[in-house]
Amino acid sequence: MHLNQTGYALLSSLLILSQATAAFGAECSIKSGPQVTPLLELYTSEGCSSCPPADQWLSGIAAAGFTSDKVVPLAFHVDYWDYIGWKDRFGKPEFSARQRQAAKSGVSAFVYTPQVMLNGADFRGWQQASRFTQVIDASLKQPAKVNMNISMAATADDKARVTVSAQGNTPADTKQLDAYIAI
Image (spheres, rainbow, N blue to C red):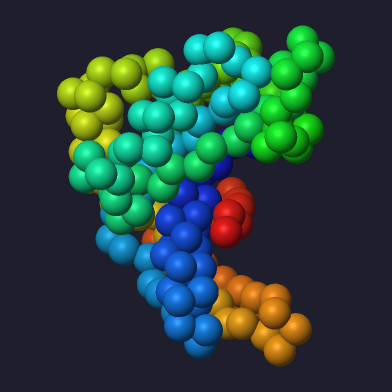
């Protein structure tokens, strides 16, 4: 599974919408912006001795100026370290499968923790602030390939109804559209 630019925009927009809907309890809608908002995925585990610095880094990126309009951060706790005796209470087999699928699609030679993927590609420069800033700034200069409209509304049974419409800017942009929702 490789997220394309449509997936990045959708995740960013839904995160903003879910915060607004939770705060106000009303229907909210949003349109995608003119550029790509980068997606940042951290694959981590409580059983990984090298993961706390990555977890701390991800938790602090908003305070460093990388707000949700500049980058969409997600943490996925994998479960493949559980066998050594420290069960990750947040670990899910689906997150491990997501990471393995990304590796199979060629974005990484193998899976490891902590692994950072930026826009669907293995990114090992996350510990270098200037390198991270450079890559984010370059991503934000990429024009969006899809125009999206998203609305979210709370339903009577305390669920959310999400409506998404997307239109590619060119026929090539609509050839492979994938949408992923994270709330």
